[in-house]
Length: 371
Image: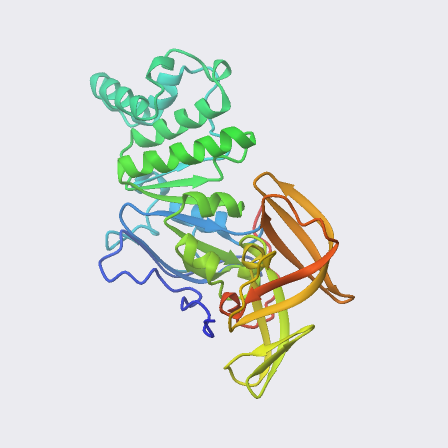
C-alpha cells in the first residue's frame, strides 16, 4: 500500500517544465466580502484537454469567466504565451467560449450563426465563406448550412456553437458545461466527438463540468476545485486511483471511506485490523468498491478478510454495486462482476495495497459562487 497521498499540492501547476500556453498566477476573486477563488495557480499546456471539475459553488465557472474576460480578477495575473491578457477586454483575447445554452440566433441560418463573429469584425465575404465552410466541415455540419436552429437537434446545435468558435481561430477554447442540456445517450456520443475534434484541432480546451464520469472520460488532466481552491490536479487515472483528500475520494466516483487509528504500526479501523507502517495517530483511507473481492479469495499476505451481510444491490448491467453491513456501525460498498452473490452473509476481502491513505480534511469557510 502507498502510504503517501498523491503528490500534487493545492494550487500547483501540472509539473511540465516547458513554457505553458496559458498561465494563471495566484488568481483570487471576490464579490464584496464573498471570496469565490483563492490563490489559484495553474498552467495549461498547448493541445491539452483540461477539465475544471467541481460542485456548484466551487469556483469553476468564475475561473472560466476570468480567463474569457467576462470578470476581473481581484488579485493575480493571467498570461497567454507569456503576455498578460487579464488587463485586456474580452474581445481582444484570442480565446472563445462555448456556452451551455449555445446562444444561437434563432433568426439566422447555421451558416450565418457560424459566420457572425467574423461578420461583426468586418472580414471580407470570401474569407468568411472559406472559414465558415471549413469550420462546419470539421464539425460535420456543412450539409446543414442553410437550416435554422429550430430545424436541427440539440447535438447539432452544439456542433454549430463549436463551429462559430473555431472560425475565430482561438488559441484556447473555453467550454462552459456545453453537454449538460443533452440526453444521456447523446451526451456520451458528444463526449467522444468533442475529444476527437480537440485531438484533430490541437487546440487547448478548458472544459467546465460538475459531472465526474464526464471529466474522467474526456480529460487529459482534471483540476478538482473545492470552495475556491484547487483540491487536486492530475490525469484522470491518477486522480481517481490516488485521491489526495477525503473530499477528492468521495467526489470522484464511489469510495469507501475507512477511518481509524494507528498504534505501533497497526491500523485499527472498526472491524478491521492490519499492519500499516505510518506514524501513530488518526487515519482516513479510501477503498474503491471495485477492489473488494468475493467468491474465490487468494490466500496471500496483505489480504484482509471480513464477514458482511449484503443488504442492498444496485444492478448496473455488467456489474452490481452491493451495500455490505459489516457491523451495526460499519457499511461498505463492493462492485462485483456478473451475478451478485446469492448468500445473504458471506466472506469479502481487500488487499491492504489497494487502500489509499488520505490527508485529513482541513476545515474551510463556506464560499458561494456568484450565480
